[in-house]
Image 1 (cartoon, protein in one colour):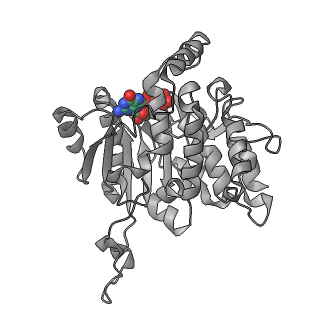
Image 2: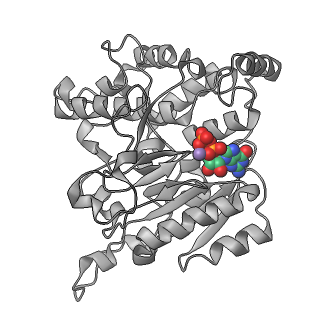
Image 3: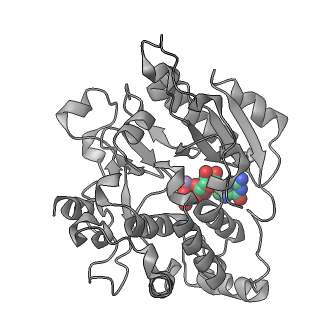
Length: 342
Ligand code: GDP
Ligand code: MN
């Protein structure tokens, strides 16, 4: 399943007469959107905003993915919103379906149990397929083969600030691998055994845990507050991600994903892709490879990151009083800031 990159003319070195190397050295990046046909209006709203604030200047392509076939109407009414290339793909049963080692009867019992406890999406089967897909598969869909970076978009989100530089080029030039705007605490009922499964994995495959010159170079303390004993529930909100695909395509991450997948927690519990991505990235990246996109105002399900810094505010149409960064009990941004500055 590992993606082999096919030859791409974009990788050729610039001709000697090239005045601006950047023209010949584009970043291979795209928007990736998992979405249902029924969410057409919501995704149109998102695309209109991302075009207005960013992509009408940079023309990055869009990749739409779905567990079902996209309708003609969906395709027509989304491609009309951009001059960028668009592509539409359907997921196969390996990327969206039960692996053979899952006991689907037990999974159904667990869903009922979680629903009765009031766990959000506790009863939803499709939500679990979605989280497993976002955790382990989107980056190896063939429509993403030509790309090195992605920006994840969802229906009905808001973008509030003008972004007048190329965020993908920023990521590449600064060796950033994972960019976010919001951090959150997780409902621990959705991930009761996730941390212990990760711990088991780490003791089995100790080479996967990066031994940076100093513990201070790692972001591990963002996800644990007791030196690795337990998960503190902090994660980056993955409905917004600007990240490098090679992070997830690495053997280390694929080994971790397979191990988690085998344990069954995507179906027997309700592991979100956000805690999975965050715990993995904290294990595998140096802390200076993370980037907080403070300048990108963003809203998802009523929660907003709105820049308060005067240098960013002038380009935004959100109210800084709505900014979620320091929301007590819900935001993990203070934890992130402390770890980054330590
Ligand atoms: P939440 O953000 O955790 O509340 O979950 P969402 O309902 O927003 O789902 C996350 C992303 O996955 C969104 O982009 C949805 O459009 C997409 N998604 C969720 N469930 C499905 C599904 O069953 N099929 C498809 N094609 N997309 C889905
Ligand atoms: Mn969402």
